[in-house]
Length: 434
Image (cartoon, rainbow, N blue to C red):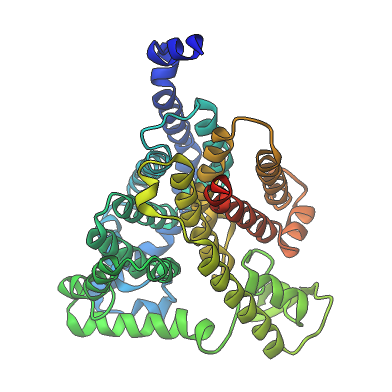
């Protein structure tokens, strides 16, 4: 007992600075990877470079959602527009370095939420970063917007944990207005009866989405409305209203997986003379697509019901109880997983949002003093989840094998397994009381 108190009152240099060293190493590593990305930028193979001419067409009054199937609502185009004015390579590199900063802040803020005033061992932070690293690198190299969405979600949740509910709602609304999937947090805040967060969300949606006063101030009122409704017709209506799903192998969402395995939808496609052409099928049933759609809807309802039953940890109690605080972050992680599981399309680099559940899992492992059943289970989740995702990696495995790993949902089953881990963590405070 005396030795433990002495170590806590006289911590070593490493104990005082381990988190800073690990986070600094994380940033330096990502900066070094920009060398590889620079070559890609010179070959104009970054996503943001592909969007550049589309964004510049805003000057000409083009309806970029209808003309190019630009994938995000108008406010996202407005945020990226200043970058589009730069030379292509400078734009791509500026975006890369900005996203390194976003990744750093997302890790730091999530870690602060889970750690609170109780220091966690350095290895848990290192483990969380290690588990999260692959999709973060993928999004950086791809040049997409997923790290921005992650940062906005984490920022909103950090504000909410600090009791700044209206601000949390406004920031979350910006995330929803940039990419629809964070809208699942609206349901979460309803479950939490966080009414002022809902008020902030309503304000934010009015500012950023509809009627969208902020993008309208840049694009003009009529142009913004045109862009918004065209985006809805091209990107939202086919999935939400018409039930259309992208079935190809690289879609790792539950809808994508079920449609290509349960109904006659292609896993691989190509274009022959500009015509969409199926190449391979891997379905082991041939269900009517309407039945498959109903199965997808049933899984969504089941997930929503499970959130009602399990997302019941107290935010106020989280201020003083470490297990409850970790359980709240696990609730956040579950919603992040839901965004991936039920999206119309989930590519591998969209999985940057796994950062939040991985941090919750690593923190909970560190809080458990013995190798009990819960800790062993969480270790198994980390190992098996990593293996499942690795089975889809064309960089680690033969190309054909890795793509078949995508066909059969390596990432999808990892998402479901990690969700199970979140449910276990979310029940920990209640089990401790009993």
